[in-house]
Image (cartoon, rainbow, N blue to C red):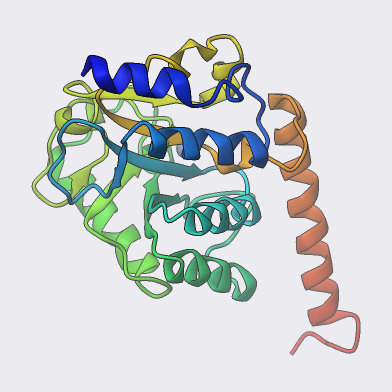
Length: 251
Ligand SMILES: [Zn+2]
């Protein structure tokens, strides 16, 4: 263990000071690999120096594709979680279907990112069967595009999905992926305030990023969110004009 720590300390200081850029992400992945970490899926048995790399696609499928290409380039496999209830993208729409198929073809797992908030109001606590049914329905929809594994991540997870196993699917927040190993997430770009994790990663961990928070150039959290909104609107406008106005018509 000490040997691993020495090894990683000698490798590369260029990941000190987190930037939410693809360059930084690339260096970070290289550093993980050089430190002996292996990238696993949710279905693999986990041991020392194993990392389950997961991406919740909350903001941008385009950013997810960019990240998936970087990883494939470096021989890294990860898991992309698709928000079927997203107001920003429709996974069933032609261009987005192709994006998801590309991510899968690059060797990554593409699974549902289920928003319980779409089904239950604050304070409601559904039973396991109801949760499993919704997850199953979303998986069936996603199966019209890709071939997901049996894993699922939850969007803005309520306490009643945390640290819990389900019979019908593999929960990304089950104890063996959450409380029993390290769990490191870039939510709200919090790594800027606490970059120490880069030197001090747990032996076994789940590492979560949100691709929409990353880009070619560094930008803050609210800037990324606003950009994702304007990009989605521009894209929707372009596709809709092409379909109905520029030579198309409503039939
Ligand atoms: Zn989410």
